[in-house]
Image (cartoon, rainbow, N blue to C red; front, side, top):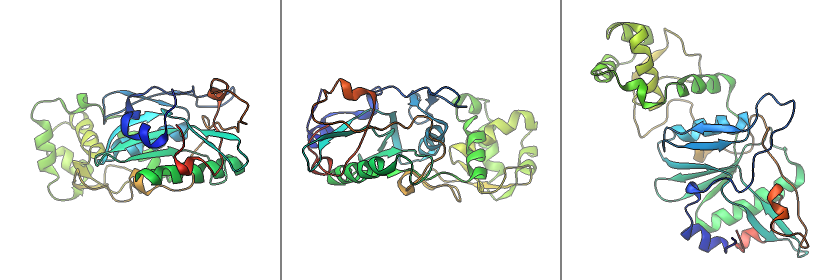
Length: 278
């Protein structure tokens, strides 16, 4: 079903929609399409690449994000020559203030070529018309990405279910202290570490994630309202990404049907900036 962009943005809960087209599985790539379990929503989000999964980690941990979806919408518009163009952003994130982010995860700033750049301009303008944001997400530093991946392994609530331990953990780090030192004041590190990592993921505790996480890393009290040092929120990303396994784009001319367009995404700068169709 097609609707005018402005109407669809008000009427459709994109966060509840499945992908409008499948993420491609490319033979020989080390990472293919999969599902990310979101700690924000308790549901799975389709991911098409390792780059997208990394950005999902960042957005899933952003306290301003309330919902996530993979490829839930296709934007269509006409370029100055009257040709239909379309684009399917890889990520959708809803913020607590009701605004939203549409985003892609390219492997480098020039990934996708001229068509992707034109689509980015068009989709960005269509989003700006609504007070939303479109971004080509920047890659994370390797250390930061590795730390987030490690903490993400403890994001599930089951890691905080040992009765009485979470309050003791938070009390142990009411002032910054080395990780292992604080853990040993609570109890057996094997039992306590998952709770500490869970608290770090959910920002109940904080540490510098730009340096390797180790037993002497300084850990202190956190805030659910602010990011850890060095961890950008989804609203701060621009131009770039890590990996590109699920990134697909192609242009469509006016003679092609909407069904034909389901296999890819493409871009140009007209139409979408006027919010003509979704």
